[in-house]
Amino acid sequence: MTGIGEAVPLRSATNDAAADVLRSHVRDIPDWPQPGVVFKDITPLLSSPTAFGVVIGAIADIARERGATTIAGIEARGFLLAAPVADRIGAALVPIRKKGKLPGPIRSATYDLEYGSATIEIHADAVPAGERVLLVDDVLATGGTAAAAHGLLVECGAEVVALTVLMELSFLPGRSRLGTLDIVPLLTI
Image 1: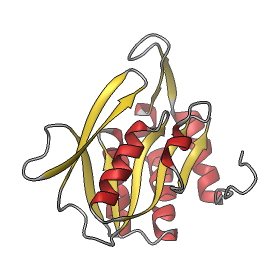
Image 2 (image 1 turned 45 degrees about the vertical axis):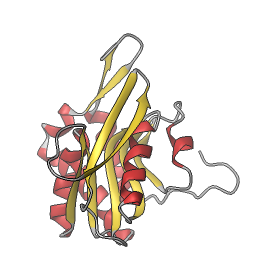
Image 3 (image 1 turned 180 degrees about the vertical axis):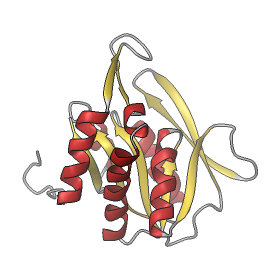
Image 4 (image 1 turned 120 degrees about the horizontal axis):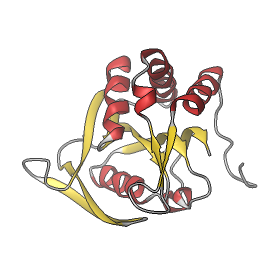
């Protein structure tokens, strides 16, 4: 639900089909990775080529609608989504990795998670200034990872056209940490 003055997310038949697929192909794993956390497991989605294709098609449509020329995926599950989207629309692919995984000059950002802290990195020259980037991940929860990734892309000079996630957990404050960034979930829980 949006408040007064907030943009209403674009919905299409493709987005609705993707939401239906996610409802039936994502399972909850309670108390993982620690007690009180309900992990959203996307492996049933990945094991169904038809379901996965529907979701990738919906994200590709979002990328096209926003004129994205680069797709950035956040390690690790964001990679699984970003790579086929980039391939499908003919865009560049940029990995945003966990600390210590990239060689050469990097930019890094440390942020808090709901159960600790983490650091992500991007190659310093990964995105040319002015590049139109769609940021992709699986779940928007507390927003720390997405905010850090967004910040790294902006530091590189990118124009981040949107953050697209499979699922937004609306009962957590993720959206509030991302300012005016356009957030496009395929399913809001």
